[in-house]
Image 1 (cartoon, rainbow, N blue to C red):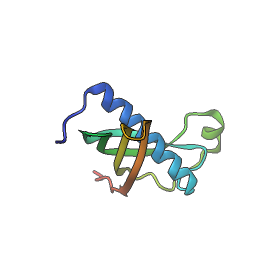
Image 2 (image 1 turned 30 degrees about the vertical axis):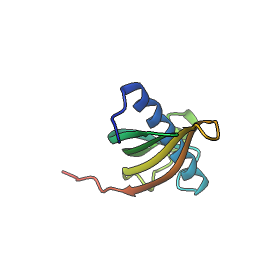
Image 3 (image 1 turned 90 degrees about the horizontal axis):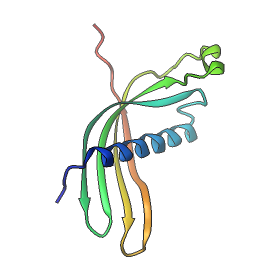
Length: 117
């Protein structure tokens, strides 16, 4: 059955998922070299331990300009500053194949409009 993760496990998973989603977004030209995803919050996360460990996690990310001189100089305006809610399924290790490490199986991100005062 699905269970909670400890803080360290959750932190490692979150870092992995954010960097994988960021790579995908760069490949799809949704982010450029001066943009990165910043984690806003972890909404939920759980794991299922079996032959391999499966993780399901939902987080909120915010695109932002990288804090590098050349990026700040460019003053690149973010066309897409809306935060996104991302869901991801990750598997880690496999007793049968002996494979180690995490693999992103699926991720979906939806933009959320922030409520403006």
